[in-house]
Amino acid sequence: MWWRRLRYLLLLAALCSIATCPSAKRACTANTRAQEAEELLSYLADRVAAIHAATGKLPSLPAGPSPVPRCCEQGGACSPDPTVWATPAWRDLGFSIDESYRYTYQYVPDPTGTSATLRAVGDLDCDDQPSLYEVKLTVVMGRLSRVWTRKDPYE
Image (cartoon, rainbow, N blue to C red; front, side, top):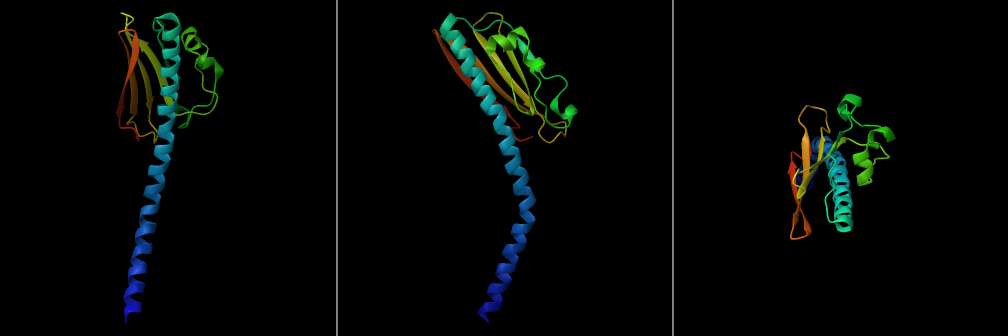
């Protein structure tokens, strides 16, 4: 008698796991793809910090948004293209992407020279609901502080 109950319970558990599998895979894929923005903005912030440490100033040239057109307009992922990162501003930051990527990147310095914003905008599922990652860099008493903002990170 108890074996039948256990059998039905196992069948129910199996059906539930099958029903949630595609959803879990999509969530895992989105999370993995969203890490691109975190990693590359961290790298860019480190580059800006190194320039600030060496010169005492933030880079003054704005860079991006790059690439244009967006990655969704290129089939969902952008192919590596050295010409996208060949502008003087990106070269000054020492930044380029050599693998396929899914975000548009931008460096926006404040005219006062005391702050800058690094931005990554992407639409991972190409549904016209972009995700936004920003790092606000601010010089406070000669030190560079970082404040992160994330809006719809898995969109």
